[in-house]
Image (cartoon, one colour):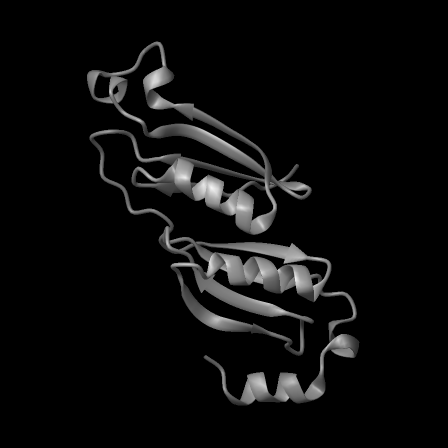
Length: 154
């Protein structure tokens, strides 16, 4: 039984999921809007907000929605989404794309536990942990790069 992250946004869910599709190579983007509901409230009828969205990421899924019209929300507080890639080049490319308009928390670099690892808060407020699969990390990581990363963490 898979665990599926479900993110919440304040009106920019459709934009965020489209961004993630491009940044992470997602497919099968699907959106259902509050206005499409047969029981939509008056506030929802004129809204473009997303009631449910989903995006396939490799073997996994990312789901999301906007906070309902007329309600407050605090998206992505206290949670990170981790995405792993088989190779450092693909992970680094995804990391670089997620930094567009975002804030780098830890630059992407080899570590003692991964051939590539980095953290970024994207422009939508989602905290991402991007990493390579842990197999053979200690044999593949450049020891000088690992030492530099550990000596000067961000």
